[in-house]
Amino acid sequence: MAMTLPTECWQEILKNVPIEDKKTLKSCLMVNRSMCKIIIPILWSNPFRYLQSSPHDQPMPSRINEQEEIIKMKINQKKLINVYISCMDYKSIDILNNNKIEIINMDKSIMFDYPSMLRELQYNIICESSSSWLYQELQLIKEFKVTTEDLEHNSKTREFKKLLLTRELCKMFMKSSTLIMNLTLSYYVPFVDMSFTPKDFFLINKLPGAEKSLKNLKKFKCSLLIDQWKEITKDLTKICGTNGSLEILELKCIGEPSVEWIDDKSFINICELIKRQKSLKHIKLNCCGKYCNISKAISSLSSQIDNIKSLEFVHLKFNSNNDNFPLNFISKCKKLNTLIFKDCDELLDYNIFTIKDTPWFNHLTKLVFEDTSISPFNITKIISFCNKLKELSCDLGEEIEFLPEFALSLPISLKHLTIDAVEININILQQFLENIKATLETLNFPAWICRSFTDQHLYIICDKLKNSLKRLDLDLMSPENQQHNVSFESIEYARKEIEVVNIESYFRYDSW
Image 1 (cartoon, rainbow, N blue to C red):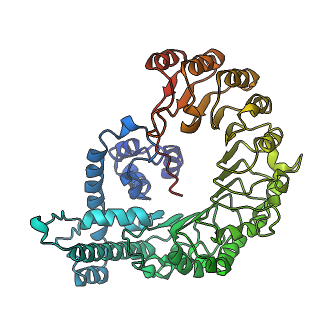
Image 2 (cartoon, rainbow, N blue to C red):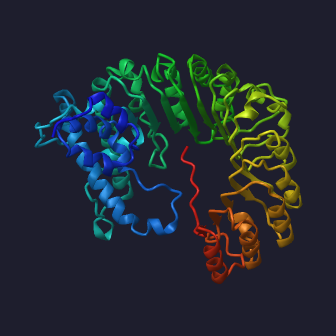
């Protein structure tokens, strides 16, 4: 069947198909050879995305057949690695064979140059896929004939092989793909022995062809242990796009740094990286403790006030009297639409980053204050200026009496609300819902506040919001949340009034 539209038109059309929609994309492969040539590069831009585990925040029912899905995923990972090994040069094959990673029966009838199509390199997922390819089921010899030392040595040997295979794959990608857009560096040492930190395996920029392959990088995510961080930050500006093309930057440090690390100069390279970018839109900084110096990178964010659209800070300790954390730059961000603080201490004075009638209020659509020390009163001051706010998440702690007044400050534009507190009684809940002028579509009460819930709470929510609410989340099934008095009958009643009522426990896991 002939193509009636030019290839360029089809490429533009297919950009509107979500890349996660593998079923639709694969169906296009069968249309004709021309369409196949268009679809193959899309599917192989990051085939590892189709081989990841289910998200950690999925409700329990969707994880019933989790074990079967994991087995299927590992089989597919092994198949994918087989394809890539068939594309390897003989030098890499020799390196693997010399380290007792046997490569036999290589399929050289490959129709496309698949490594050249890679656009997103996720080190952790490639590691996981390499492990699946290398995996051979190990059974412990009965009667304890295998010692603990033997098992540990065997585990480290397997880990070394996994990292070696991953390195050779990354070497092939750096050499073959001239346009990697997204890079994720993440690795967790699977041993108690923290001395097992093969830093050289993560220095992607030192692989042949990396300078050309990564020069136009748009997205960089890095989540490593402290010692690994020190190695990576030495060459950070070389890893992350020499053209200043980064749009998304997410940095996370893992571990508990000692007091000596607070004077480590590695953060200087992070600051330099940020300053070099021409259009940095999304920034996330996730610190690992009191002495983590990633937080010092905040001082460089003022260089991006014309570009920033999203800011997220996790596990940071702020101090309004400390010049190392000048949050007042936020008030100058002209395009900011998302601002998130999670588990941040000493975020006390909202004036350090809010000034009335400043540009960022005009665009803010999402605001999150979770486990922070900022008071509910100060949060109301902030949201009172945000007339386009659509999503809000915050915890009031013990200030539950303030909830009805808090509702009065919620903008009309608000659609999605998450509220947590120590508890909430029926009268306060009723006043709170009556004072909300916005037309809420989703309402979420996490496990902590749900401990005080009864049937009456549920009936009040249905009565006040049934005309607008499309989804209600009540975290009633958490192991730690067995104090609530919500009956199954009241839940069934709510499900007749509201389109979706979810009571399952979610495993909230922030991997970044």
